[in-house]
Image 1 (cartoon, rainbow, N blue to C red):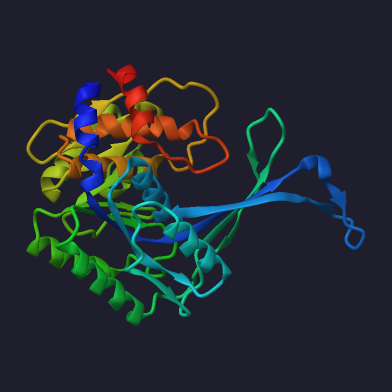
Image 2 (cartoon, rainbow, N blue to C red; image 1 turned 30 degrees about the vertical axis):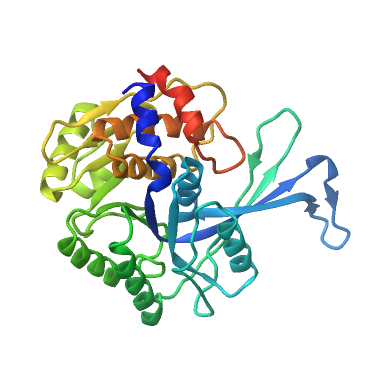
Length: 341
């Protein structure tokens, strides 16, 4: 791919409509100034003084952030937050992003807002250091009423969007926005609308997913297919190709420093090497940037090879953004793309 071809694909991004179905969380960053550390008179323990608090959408929200950075015309988050302070912050952060429509994002008293609270030590001239996270999650099954509302939203959006992303971020099955019932509904949907582009990623496993495009890392590919041990690159390509033929949909595998593999049902798998490192890195959010860019590129008409080239560059940009879950914009990708030829 050359820069002209990428500009042609990216020129279609403002006309795209993409739904993001999944677990939206609030990423809350607590910036700590270590020079202001005190000792508590009451407990004798260190007191970490927070000098700044910033929040942004996380998990499925990170994918959404990347779609916003690409200039996607309409983005529909499909999920939920609680009727709590974190939910208020999450909704406000979502509605402030260009192109985001909250028509199908549910606020409910039946759930807590999924929150990652990330304390960061901020020292001048140094990269932020993340301390132990403080998480807020739901530990009970997602109520049937809420699942029904999500299924209704997916059904209404299916004929209105150019692509749909599924993002399962929760550790405990059936407690988030992607449940067995919702996957069953999506399976029925793709039978009715086989041309609808659906890309799925799961923190736990993609086992049992309906025939949609699958995105995973190498360890997840091994677990899904029963492969033993760490696979060599040729084995990853062969395994991804076989899975794509079985699924009758594209399969994408992220390989960290080894790059990215894309396989389609009807052609040989493609591989692109990772770009050289350009300084300190923070890998948080790289996979979500890949998911967003794969989906946007494919929806705009890219081939599998072109999509993984674009997504590979986006991941390289994101890992060099420290102390935050970053994004990659069209100008940033265009500037770096020639280095990947």
